[in-house]
Length: 324
Image (cartoon, rainbow, N blue to C red; front, side, top):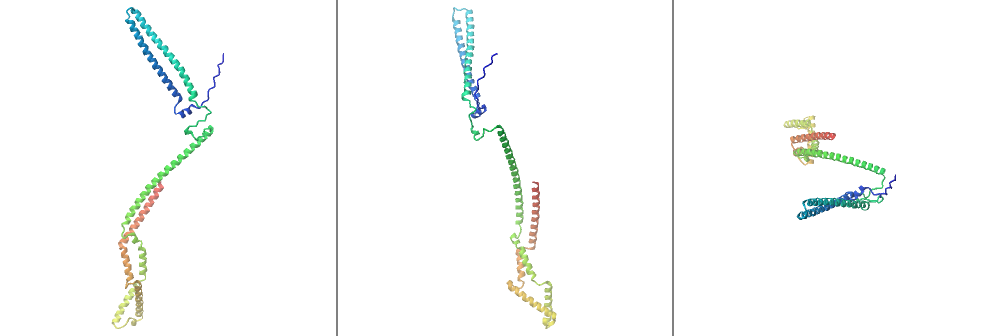
């Protein structure tokens, strides 16, 4: 048994996928389309030849029928012979033409794949979208690099999820701040209705301290009662023809005390720039400018109510923060 001859060495080419990726189409499909177009052209030629031969056979039969010297049997035999010759000739013509077409385009396909659509294996080919890539990497290194890139993608996805959660928290915080702002505006509108304004109420404590300081310098009620009794008794005694310091030791002490108090009152009047109860009148005037007692009580009540609302809102905000 004879051994078959070894197959000729084939040319090492690049993977076909690289060629398709570079060209944007499959070379084999292009060649198949060209061959199909050629086969369609051959079929059109055969159809045209068949129509021509059929017309020629019909004309030949018609001439034979017009001849008077030919018998009917000869005419039938001539018709059958003509039809058979046409059919056999068309089959032979089609077979021969398709055979030569197949041989020619087989050579054409092989030549194109070897010379046109061929990239040698050792030729470095870098596609535009592969620029900058390390194509000389070993498979193990490529798998390790791919795993590293996947880990990087997972890490970036986690960061993206964290940013989305932070965005949702910020949106909720903005809504909570808007609600707090609305409540603050409501409290402000309720406080703006106070009369007198807060600028006047801010001086209330200072005015009250000044009033207390002035009132603390006034004599007590017992001293005023003693002076009143003394003045009454002195007036009675003066009516009887005796002076106050001449009546008794107590009368003298009362008279001396009254003189001292009168002197002090005169000095305070000179300092205050008024007469009599100028300091008290000044305090009364200041209190009147601040407002009546009812207004001050109403202001204190509103301040306490606002403080209670603020504490309640702070508790609600703390609860909402704990829930979040």
